[in-house]
Length: 294
Image 1 (cartoon, rainbow, N blue to C red):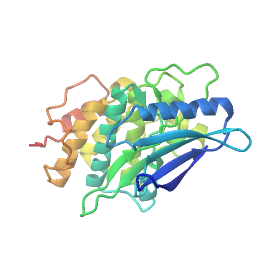
Image 2 (tube, rainbow, N blue to C red; image 1 turned 90 degrees about the horizontal axis):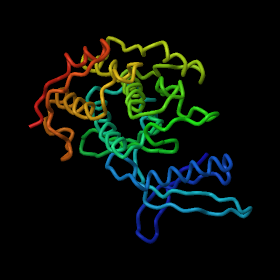
Image 3 (tube, helix red, strand yellow; image 1 turned 45 degrees about the vertical axis):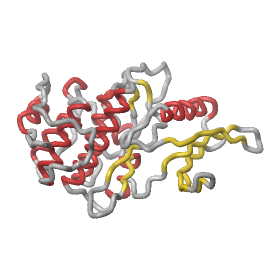
Image 4 (tube, rainbow, N blue to C red; image 1 turned 120 degrees about the vertical axis):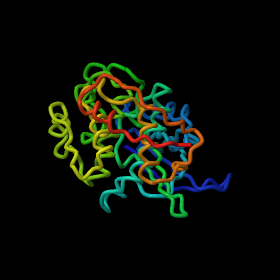
């Protein structure tokens, strides 16, 4: 529905990214969706989200409106491109997970569910000096307000390989849906393969009856955590706030660097609360790392 270009802001002398929607793409419904994306992005401001700088409407020669977004230009690959080179290491995965969890904690706090967490929507900022890449979440094109009930006849939105079970069932979506999708993305970072491959219908329906396979090659603490994140029952998944703390602990434990990730907003790492849940979640609660953050 759109293309993204690198451009130059000649007034401010900076490079930007411009997301230009196709004129009249998808009719009135698509135009409303585009306007919704603009309004949602305009109200969000976080270091783990791609920043919206400006927006406008261009009119083609045929009189069709064409919405465009002017955004922060992120120099670096997306996670899908990075995974084409093979699986990632636990420290790099932990850093990416922590960045994304912080961004999702912010968006969920604003009542917004992303609904399309996937490798292609995660941009990696190369910080240089040998430090780990930092992740930024982009493309809020199908984001929605938490708890909204899909209207009759409304199509399921999202990417089939990363849909949560509740998205596949077309139930009201909460932040727990993003937690599930993030769990599938992080599992793919370890394995280099999609957890639920296949056609759109086959891939979406499998997660209603199956849990993703988490191989023994994944470290135990991560196996427990990913199993909890991808629990089919919404109530069995950790909250995004609990994940921010857990990912922070994992990065510190695996890297041995108590200053990583360097975020002044990172809370101290208390003992995570217990919650009633599946065997996978209970196992994670028992095996979570207990690293001090200083």
